[in-house]
Every structure is written in C-alpha cells, then in structure tokens.
Picture 1: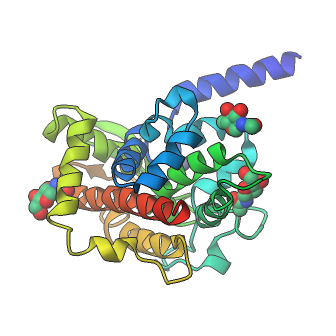
Picture 2 (picture 1 turned 90 degrees about the vertical axis):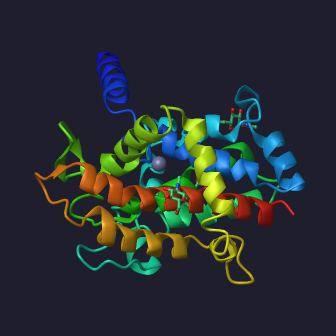
Picture 3 (picture 1 turned 90 degrees about the horizontal axis):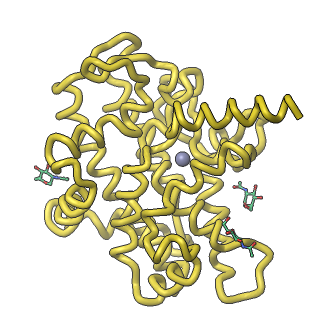
Length: 284
Ligand SMILES: *[C@@H]1O[C@H](CO)[C@@H](O)[C@H](O)[C@H]1NC(C)=O
Ligand SMILES: *[C@@H]1O[C@H](CO)[C@@H](O)[C@H](O)[C@H]1NC(C)=O
Ligand SMILES: *[C@@H]1O[C@H](CO)[C@@H](O)[C@H](O)[C@H]1NC(C)=O
Ligand SMILES: [Zn+2]
C-alpha cells in the first residue's frame, strides 16, 4: 500500500513537473489536429464526430494530447511516440529502427500509425477494438512523427539528453522542438493566441505551399497512410536543422529560432494535412 502511495505521488509530481516529456507539446498537437479537422470530408467529419468522446465537444484538438496523458499508466504505449535511428546516419529504415528497447518489431510511432489506421478501417463493422482510442492515438502519433526529433538518434534519446539554453532558460533540445519554438512564436508573432497561429499556417497551406499539398497527401496507391515517408523526412530535418549548431551546452537564440521556425511551421502543416488525408481515406 505504502509503496503504491509513494509511486502515485511520484507519478503525479512527475506529470506536474514534466507535463510534455517526449512529445510535441500540447500546442503542437492541438495545432496539427485543428488543421486536420478543418480539412475533413463530410463523411470523415461525421465519423470523427461519432467517435470523439462527448467531453471533447466535437473538437479533435482538445483531445489530441490524450495519448501523452495515458502513457504514464499504459506503459506499453510509451515506445509508440517515437522511433530512434542510429547515431549520425540521418536516415530511417522500418526494419532497423521501428523496434522498442526489447527489440520488438513495429513498436514505434510508424508501427502505431499503421496499427491504428488499420483498426479504424473497421469503422461501421463489428470490431474488437476501441475505435475512440484508435482515433485519439492516430491523431496524436501523426503529430509526433512530424516532430523531427521524434525520429532522432538513439544514444541521446531524440536529443532529450542534449542540454542547451533556450535564450536564458535551461532546456533540453528535444523540448525546444516540442514546445519552446512554438511558444516563442506564439508570444512574438501571434499575441499568444494559438488560433492565430493555426490561421497563419492554414493560410500558407492555401498559398505558399499550395503546389505541394497534393504531394504531402499522396501515398502509393494501395496505402491508406505512409508514415515511413514522414519518419524519413523527420530524421533528415533533425540532422539538417534540429541537431545542427546545437551541441550540448549551446545557447540558442534568435539565429536558431528564426531559421528553424519555418521548419516547425512546415511540419505542423504537413501533420495536419496528412492526418486529414489519412482520415478521409479511412472513412470514405
Ligand atoms: C496496436 O493496437 C493495439 C490496441 O491498442 C495494441 O494492443 C497493440 O500493442 C498495438 N500495436 C502497435 C504496434 O501499436
Ligand atoms: C473506449 O475508450 C474511451 C477512451 O479511453 C473510453 O472512454 C470508452 O469507455 C471506451 N469504450 C469502450 C466501449 O470500452
Ligand atoms: C507563411 O509564408 C510566408 C511567406 O513564405 C512566411 O513569411 C511566413 O512566415 C509563413 N507563416 C507560416 C505560419 O508558415
Ligand atoms: Zn507523443
């Protein structure tokens, strides 16, 4: 009993101290999910509405971080938020990298996206799966796979072990990409209003990126979703932008922030567009 009490207190303190360890922060996920929900076909929008828990009030963004909250008691879900690739290689391979610490195949963010996509294809049929959970997991992991450092290097745990300063604050590099860049952007450019940030990204989806969106959405003809591609792009961006010029002990300021923000904007846009495209293919 005492043991459980201590463990409970430990877990609660942990959640309070580190609410978003190893995940796009709440904002990154909510942004991707808002973009996605605004792009759903009528059929997909209706299915999502039916599957969302009632407390979400048909707002996918409000439950987009559910998977982060349950990982503290559903321990088996922890490896599903990321994939690790070998140090310094800057590429991702499913057979080599989509495994958990025990070497079990498919237990990474890519395997999880495929898994929950397949489960959702049972919608409208008799199914053994909880499709509400499948929707919440898929929506969350689609965000995670687009955060470059969720497909980072193995030995630094996706840069969780790289300590830097974000301006004057001590931070680890993974957290900088989960949260700090997004928060600083919201404060500096969007009056600390997440909806303004979402609108700015949506505008660029229809303008700056208009010619690329079809390519982002596309998978090969027989696939409903294609997370291997998203993960490969992720580790490339991690090497080219996240790890670059950010070694242990560095101080990251405007140079880093302003040159990396466009990558964060792009990855949030792609996450939203691809989540919508995947859901639109699932619920045809
Ligand atoms: C697939 O989903 C089921 C149900 O949530 C889970 O038990 C299983 O571990 C998942 N596998 C992967 C690779 O995500
Ligand atoms: C499915 O999962 C959701 C979220 O955890 C839960 O609220 C709901 O009760 C579950 N439904 C069933 C039928 O178990
Ligand atoms: C939108 O695109 C413009 C022009 O490329 C760029 O200056 C701006 O930072 C972009 N904003 C977002 C949120 O992507
Ligand atoms: Zn996550």
